[in-house]
Image 1 (tube, rainbow, N blue to C red):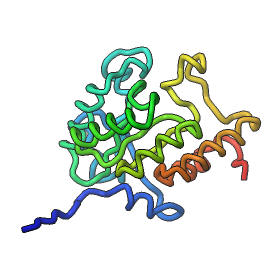
Image 2: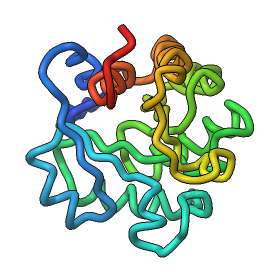
Image 3: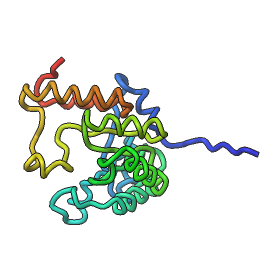
Image 4: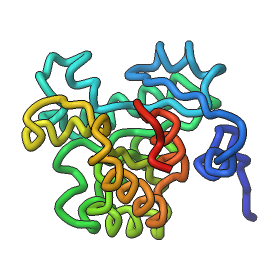
Length: 199
């Protein structure tokens, strides 16, 4: 006998279906207590790797291990019951190849119960994003100021204030959206633009 269980949480496809419609509310949560407080009021909560700096005293997000993200992600899922939970993939857990990214992302989904993962990177991550989404892993992509690239960027530098940067950022946003990243990526980038949107 087959038993079907109804998903009570907001899902990634439900968020995607709201593109261009009702605004999406999101906050960051690092532990069960915060998750329980904000759960009734948000559509999704992000378990960001910034927890390494905020809670564990790291100078950047780079040293954060996958096990730490899984521990915090599982706590946020346990503390909530309604919102979609998105867990950051930490530096070094997805960049090497789509296969390794899948192995680690699958582990995050299985061990936390979250509904999506987030990774950093634009057009150069399109192959990985496509590989993950085609295998059942919803992906939220992060472009612009990417903290995991702090050593290459030479610090936490705001991106997109110079009009010369707009074209490459829009290319990143469009490319990852076509690769399967959750479609609020481009919309959020345009709505948060510090100056005028390039289009």
